[in-house]
Image (cartoon, rainbow, N blue to C red; front, top):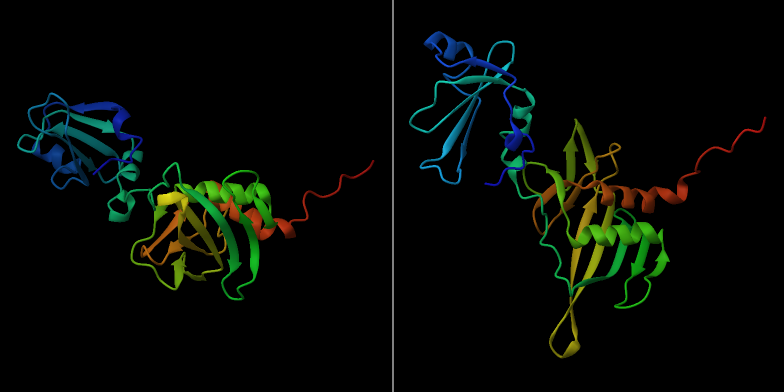
Length: 250
């Protein structure tokens, strides 16, 4: 398992707590039942290093470094944020690449954004091998940004469980509102292109940095990265955005 934690490589002690803890100390600091145990393979070490994290009744966090057989005697106080960087939910450790990146010789030849309920086309573009995209509807920059995001589709986080017909989040059931469909062309033998289609379903945006997306074929629901969220917002709501209010004249 690869760590996504940005805190772990730079974990620093805020305070040296003890190098001879008693049984009562270890119980008070939560080491009878550590909240996290992280096994680290270190180059040159004979055995994996084990980082154990415990907490006291005030939710202070303590670290203990040792091995599987010998937990170590030195105890350090560390920042509480390390627990957030080491979540227990399996979905938190899933590879952030939702799909494999497209090879360099592949291209998105067509992009279409539609309303799920009505089938109405919201935005559409064709991307020829050379030259500028043929935009039939929608903001050109947002369509290009959407295509770029789909070349290497990544998740900020995944929702647990399989793909469902709607997303339940924050106590609300959120239906799939839009469908983003990309046609992918890859050169084949004799110069002929082989095509495939990727279909992404999207809910309405639920906040400045959150929107849910799902791919039925991959049985997955996730929050996409911000560039795709912003591009889809421009395509769906840009035409209705009145822009900044007129400047008042003195």
